[in-house]
Length: 223
Image (cartoon, rainbow, N blue to C red; front, side):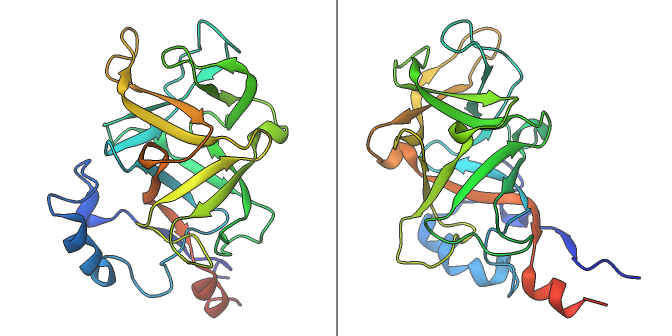
């Protein structure tokens, strides 16, 4: 019996070299979206495992498996230019059925597929470089793992290749990365990831490479 869901490897050909715009201007990228993503696969869906790009710096959200020396001393979360790392895949975990498009305003968890740590934040610890709100990888599960997807454009659902904000449910602060705030040893070149009170260009993220489920395809393939 064929699987109820078709598990698609959606590694975007235009973005495999670690470049957000594939060497083109954003406008040219937008014009080519129909050629990059097939119909029915336009959205980020529940159960998909994806890589998240920090739009401003063209780096990927990653859990390098290094603990903070201060603050919570949980796992550090960073942004790094290496798009090929297996440590920057994140499972989109929601209460919606697998394959359902994530709605704008929906609460999700982002679970690192390499370590099973949840993307987490808390108001009682500061990030080590900028002194903003700390963001960490948490090996438990609580309300500090919940993030609301905020779409920048007037959309009903989170679309791939379009920037979004992630608002921390418990504190109301936004996931960000500051390109000027970089670590030294042992994670040289990694940007600090933290949370900001208000969103700006440092808080924009985009779903790129990944393994995506499509509700439309799964229904068509149901036995």
